[in-house]
Amino acid sequence: MKYIEEKAEDLLTQLKVNKLPINPKVCAEKLNLTVEAAMLEDDISGIFLAENSEYYIIYNKNEGTLRQRFTIAHELGHFILHKDLGVFVDRKSTALYRNSSSATGEVLKEREANAFAAALLMPRILIEKELDAISESEDIIEILADKFKVSKPAMSFRLSNLGYELF
Image 1: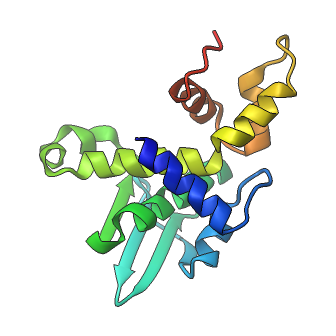
Image 2: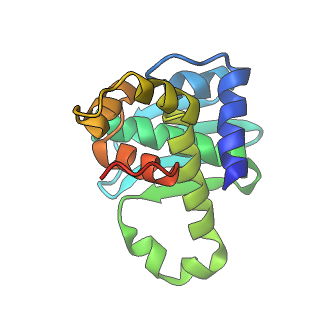
């Protein structure tokens, strides 16, 4: 999914965003998307809606800050990668990935949006810069997760996808 990395990097360059932590809400708003918190069902993290050339990201206001950040970045990924397709409702449950929707390409689109969110919130170049400043004796994942304002599992997964072996 190298093209997704490039799309995220291009967006950050276009928006002149290069300081930590990346704010996905500001990125979306710079692209004229409306971003709103709402009371959503417990199993819904976010919604991307394209309607009459207007674009909306709605995220669950009952979730934690780190989850909200990732959700906004994920929905922004749908905008950048799939905006012509209309509506995406992102549920917490992984059951979505094991049912009939698996054959429709929906799973691929969700993976693409997740990859975009990871690349946006944790850009490779900024990870490399931060890794250079951390000593080997420190808890690298915890330090990076804190700097990038993402969860430790998200940072661990991102580092693994970038080819870092930290264990």
